[in-house]
Image (cartoon, rainbow, N blue to C red; front, side):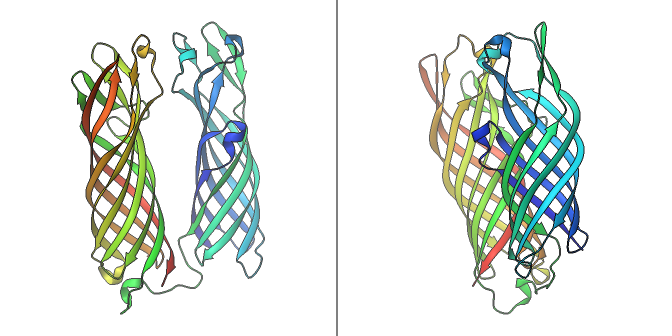
Length: 374
């Protein structure tokens, strides 16, 4: 009997219109063949009104929270585990990121309902407690009514979703000692995932143009998600390549919010690690220099009559600290705070070019999977 955490990202789904799909799961293998899990799946689709020529009004977010049963059949000494899964729960839909065709229209597309899922997948165990996962399932949602101005049409958010990810078990069948308990510490390669957010610490882009939290933010806390690839060399030093991204609104004086702006740094970092308690806890400091991609998108109704453009790659610097907690020899969770500074971002407003600097204070949680050691 082992509890696990399932992290997955949508793949191949753009072929049939599912965008930005990701999922989370908390589960428990009850025995060799039967398990249960609580699955969260979120994605976006383009919302189109047939009475307005089928043009996209904006994006419709669909989410489900479904308790599921999982029937497993381990093969090849438990290395390969195909399974089927199914369940019934609840769902919600939310309209966001209005497009130009939706400007000037009163749109009501937020709703709640039921959801059900049936699917299949396979786990391939790369370690005793880490499995690479492929999964595909059909998720049905109850039909919803969408109202645009004075007419209503039915919208069905049901869809097929395909994902790739990792299933991470909190316990090992054959526990190994922590790295910090060994006299000789090997080099270890890892893959990581981060989630959290940031506060803007310098929100002035240039005279009359500011960065502000967008509609998805929690107050002033802007959501950010990312990935990490890294290596630890011995007991104290490591390097990693960290990439993450988030969006904020661009506000122009006298106009309002005209669009969203992507901030996506990709930064090589050095980590100084200080293991304690036989390596169970690892405080660390980090610093790095890299690049940041910026792009204006998702223009707002107030942008009508204003020409605003921004896209480019700019220098970036980060400095921070965190602490890792190892639940097993090869799995750690960490909490981290970093200051991100990126400069010389360019925009054009009605033909006039200007540049400015940008800084964030980031707070992130991360999962690191140590897959190779030598």
